[in-house]
Image (cartoon, rainbow, N blue to C red; front, side, top):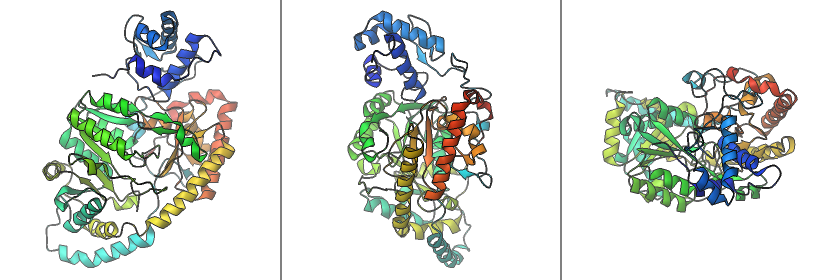
Length: 504
């Protein structure tokens, strides 16, 4: 079932749209177009009828008809007058600026995992940290002394080593979600965990609710499983500006609840320092989300990969504390090191057994040495975090200050945790910036990688995982790249040369 938007819902998103700067129908069309480009109205969404919207806005039907007609001429709506129009992204704007050329933006050839950035480039495509060196080294040294005890066995374990599962379960229990080792399945990272969940619980053409924007590799996994992502846009929350940054996105609970009423098979959410926006879902909304998913019979899959990167010390409960039916994904990749390739699934015992059975078609278990080391790291999870969080806070402050100083027309939403800032650009130039960025010594991940169907051309994720001096060089490079685009708008047409990059 395709998504649709009520007249009241669109009216709420439009806000104060009629400011009198241009004819009313043009102002209405301009704001709707921006909502589509920003991803706040998902693609292939049926807009309300002309009559319903005119009544909701208190304007003439002629004005709405003219606005819809202009949007159809510009390629942002399909359908004809008198029928439900659906949103889309055109291949070209009226001025001839190409929005899509060559393969589709979500073509696997453009999103396949690649190598790290070439030497000399500052890599802003990844939001990941180097290893917490000494801590990881000690964990592997301890694991090496424990390995001989496992050598007489076969070495295959589809569920995972008991010491690691016990350590992970203890963390959940201490956080307010009582858990036993039998509720934990060890995986080779969070992406592996999501693939196992999709393989077990979703079939081809099943709908999977996702936040919009969302984590690109999760979107890729959902598509690769043959499922259909159902995007739900964030709403704006002006309170984000209190930290000197732009308005912060917030979860639109009314939209999430409405989408869940369509009974998607799964819902994949990142409530803890959401990737890419860095926002934290309050406990009240977590309860509301759990209840709505339960009422719809939707399996709620919660990605907690970034939960430990709590930069402002905000207190929330794991979503699993509100329901035994929640399926949770965790990982050591962001808190300790991506090279560990160790993650887990927390679920009911019955589901863990189903996940383990489905896993055997992917692999027969994870490497034992890494699991032994991971058990030490989980038991002492807090040891490297204070220093890591302090460094990240410094880098976050440096990045926001640099963006405000050198790119004042960018609006950077204040991230309360995680590893990156989500920036609204002054124009839909995200892919064009990505194309020319290597010429200025940086590598980027274009905003549309975080959305469905080419949305978020006006957005860019900027990680603050680098030290302040590197961030300064990166922001100066971004300034130079935008200056080139401003001086030569024709460069925005060079989208088909966008580099294929992996994103973390």
